[in-house]
Image 1 (tube, one colour):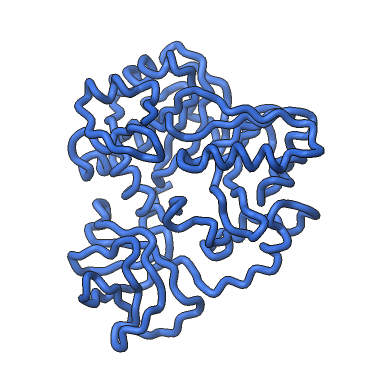
Image 2 (tube, rainbow, N blue to C red; image 1 turned 180 degrees about the horizontal axis):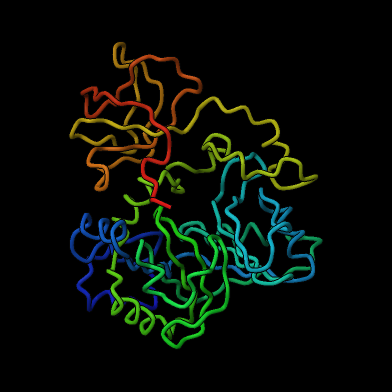
Length: 348
């Protein structure tokens, strides 16, 4: 199991650890629900050092990423970021990514921990004919998320959403990005491994509460954000997940382009809510409440600490009629209702 630069800090804080994508990561420090509420009400502090960081640079960097990814990265201005995906030639999703343009010829590709080796390998495979250098980076990543994040980080309140710039935090040189995966305002801080503990201590001293992977999952679920391996996989296209808007179909040539232009999804990703006490969980069947006919499958589900009732994401048959729906929860049909996503949206 790999460990991030902050492992010793988490041990001192009494974290409960779990294995995640080959990393030993803090699952929680105390209460999952307490950490969740801290992010919604003040600010949470996350170690994201397990995420993959890949530098793509060179004269053809923008053209290469236009070819390799589904978005138009050449249109991203230096200092800004874009959410995009790496797809297979079949159109299936290999990973969803955030890509930052650091300079005219330099980009930072951030991949999910479990997929980082695949992303690095596939970028290399698609790089033939392009003047680019692709390099895996080894450095820390810390996130501060919540309504108090701006006050805690300080000095950079005017940094725009999905923007990145060099900054100083706790006297250390960092890259500061206004991005996140919780549905709240906040920052992600890219720094040298040797600076991570001091930056973490600085942010904690200013009021950010350490938060683990457990609450990160319920936060992103409330925000309707997909998780690779649940809502996204090689078996799903961006269109299945309702994310067709990020695919630049008018690009002349890109990996998976032909398959994505021909895509005709038979399913759609929807939000489900129930007023019952039992939560739909990943793998549970969505059925007709009267006949029991299978109409889909839950991909993620949990009690929502913020909303006070269970919520779930599920793939269901496209263009369902107005029939009553239920989720088969261990042999019992629990009535559910399709709702618009996200389940939770912060006040702007």
